[in-house]
Length: 378
Ligand SMILES: [Cu+2]
Image 1 (tube, protein in one colour):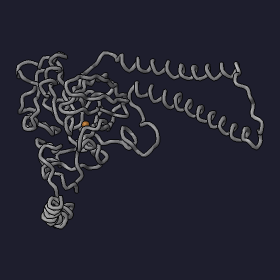
Image 2 (spheres, protein in one colour):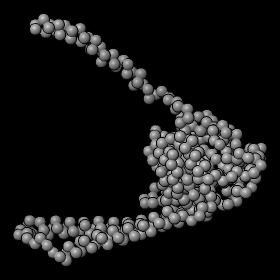
Image 3 (cartoon, protein in one colour):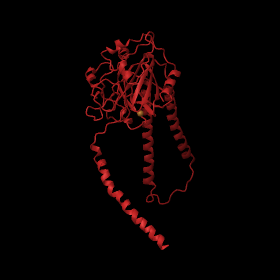
Image 4 (cartoon, helix red, strand yellow):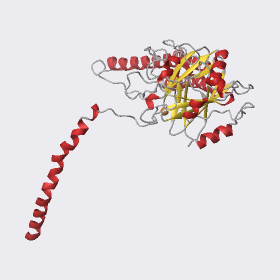
């Protein structure tokens, strides 16, 4: 046994120096890591870098105020530091915000004050000092009826208008146009199948952002607030019922525009539907609202609502056509002064303009077509 003990001790002694060297050498290995923050890290290609977008020389071609580049107004369609909900610009948004502000919030405030008052009343008047002999009553029919009926009435008063609101939300009027929205890590792409328009939309980075590539246009104040402005806005006609078909290409995203009261999960392999009737022209900002990866916070949504005439101008600038009109030839769209994504640029970005037949308008795809494309995108 003693021999075995010595053997174990010797083995341990032989191993110890090697074991002791590991922590000794660890600091020297960690030295480069300590200086790592000063090393400029180049993000991997394809992580929201919009490779197919026009280069910085075209930045001057962006005319603030032109269609697709309307100048946002502070406090409209974007957060401005006020507490509470953003101002609403859709009928559903107005109904829901009124329900929240004029009904739910007062009910919550009244319940809180009544409960606080009851607590203070019990604490002050039923403390041991002022009430040394407690009541032995265990039942009071009137009180029991009250504390049963009042909460039921409160819940019914909340449930009935909630269900009416949900009914309005889920029974939209017939759609005037359809937009397919696809979430990607980490940008959005939009298709207007009836108009032959299809494009990607990336966040605009700040001029001093070290991850901004040389060919990427930098954000200006005319584009919108930092982290919310995009290179290609979704332009829609104001006053029309827009149906959004929402899906995703990779992971779950969420298409959310607070001033429209829209928040719809975008799930791979599924088509979800929401809608908006934007009541007035303007620029409205939203964000992906489902934690979807490292750059989840950098895939904003910008909807520009405009007049039907300017919407038609935008459709033409994107190489599309109004329903019933013949699709334009590529030459006519490339020369358009407001075009910032010619068909060639979109092709470089991997987008598929939906104008397969130059002689006739593209047929409107059925829901099955859209579902097939969503499945193929997996
Ligand atoms: Cu996302």
